[in-house]
Image: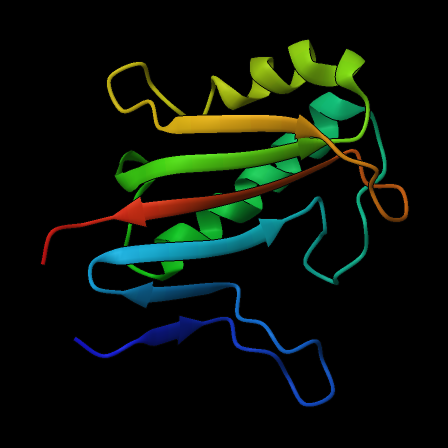
Amino acid sequence: MAIQRFGTPKQGALPFAKAVAAGGFLYVSGQVPRDEKGEIVCGNMLTQAKVTLDNLKKVVESAGYGMQDIVKVEAWIDDPRDFVDFNKVYAQYFSAEHAPARVTVQAEMMSDLRVEVACVAYKAQ
């Protein structure tokens, strides 16, 4: 199967795709709380986590996968005190039945970001 790229950059943008599918796997680049215009959605962790995970879901679904196909999640949060609020939102997107492996680490974020989330999904071909 050929490699497919989704959400490839526009002329002059940073050179990375929102997602790349290869061999049944979908690798989704880090998603952040940006609105449709590309502006950062400011707010607390509850707000930013919801927008971020909505963005992740859109990318996954645009590539023909579903949230149940996600096998690994990587999350970066700016303030470890936001871990509980991040998990409150995260639990709304992943069921116990389809829970992916996950790593969550503290990382200093750029701008006013509180969270970034990337994932790997898989569907048998």
